[in-house]
Length: 114
Image (cartoon, rainbow, N blue to C red):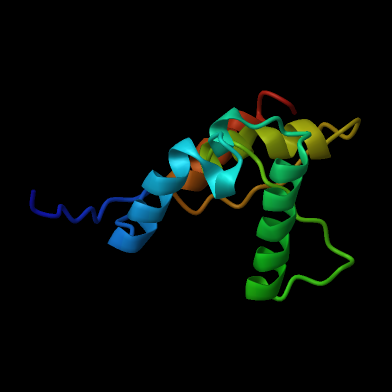
């Protein structure tokens, strides 16, 4: 099968070695006998994965210790709701700069909370 190259926004092409490692670890992650997708989020194996992911991200982006790292599900669009829902609190007012299509979406979602 020939390789397909994806240049669209969102998911991108991964190196073959990454895909092969993911394939190999899908059924048995590091000898645990289970996939990462089957692990409890409270298990020592998963906590190790999450801790290493945070450490790697902190190193890569030089994130200081006085900042928290959040791993959130969804994409940017879901954050259009998460930000006003979690940060506005009792103020119920926010200022947005409308610069185009993406900010229009963020503004529309924020109106649900303002």
